[in-house]
Image 1 (cartoon, one colour):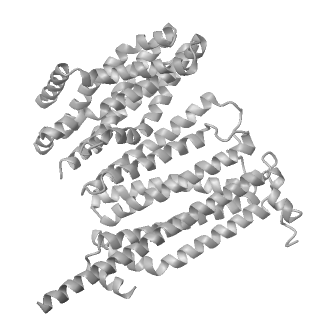
Image 2 (cartoon, chains in turn green, red, brown):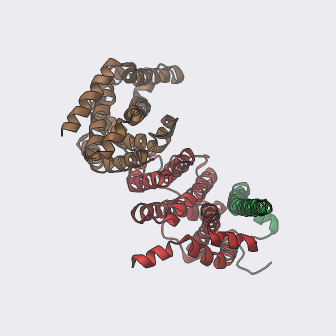
Image 3 (tube, chains in turn orange, purple, red):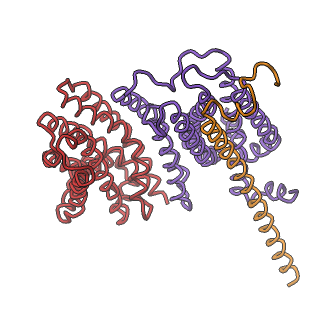
Length: 70
Length: 245
Length: 222
């Protein structure tokens, strides 16, 4: 297999983890979920903030245009 | 000197500088997290007593360390806000709380998952897990107070006071919980307190701790930037920045 | 000094005229304790074993129940603002409030200890230790709780929030107090615990009112 230092004989050994597979994979999976959520949330908020910011600016421009017309 | 400090606390300058570094910081942290995880999963020898479940340590311990130092950082920012009224510090307090809480949650759950194959129970009231639980409540308190006071001008200062009271209590709480556990400890040793670890076990741990810290700062920067955009939305430089997006 | 005694006197007078605010937490205390035998079983051995914990948790909850009213009525009628904005020391005012709160909630709880001990089959050593521990700790509970009460005084439903905010700070107190009672029941020396609880009390006495006063300043700043 890749490099003699890997601690598992086969891929199925790797997933099985000597009987502790469920725990390890749930733990690492949960970690990925938490970290991904921590990235996703601020990214989503950022999009909202930019959108509402541009909207606010458009409103100001529109009301200024209306003022100029009248 | 205070001039420099105030410049450093300028939201605009923070925004500009962080903008240049946020992507590389996040990428580096994700790379290190991936690398450290691969190292922990594939190359670390299984423990003599715990077998392969020791690999969970490489998430639980960094998360637990970060959970605690996150609170201390939050309290530091709170102190800066109360003393020097630097608004960026208030933003930092607001942004650290939810991230710290989620990391603490992660530490709690991975601790429980680690405990099951090791001790046979999903939850044990050992010193570390119990004080992590109390730490979680401390974070929740700060978040709850801010949520309750959202529309009030003094919300920042109230949360800052609470964070400082919390950080002063934190060593007392930790000490009392650890002492409490020695009174009630069923076993004569704690499996989660490992004695001297060989390098092949603590090197990847170091990598993961560092990776978690980098990730923390990367996420914090994302959140702080959002908050700055919201608070300074009437500033010219924000409007110019928005135009280019 | 005048402010201190005037404040305490006024709080005591007000509460003697409206005793329900004082009595409710006490009744709650007894009710909570009574629920445990119903939930766990009436066996004396079992209850005696966990009695210190039950009594202490009930005491903490009862204290938190009464905490909300520490500053609220003063806030609502505007007298809080008067005191904070005046030249008088807010620190002294906070101390006065803590004292009156303790006299009205902590001290009655201490006096209820024998009843609680009776309900849960605590023996004599246990009763003494329990009473002493509560006596030493209840001022601390009022001091620390005052911080939470001051932080949430302006909020409409601050009561439950105070519980969430203050509970972590009560953990060390709970740990040492119940350990003291267990030690007393086992016959060992409790003086170490007394020192620890006194240390926590004096530490809180010095530091908590600072935070409470700061929070009151915030609340009246609006």
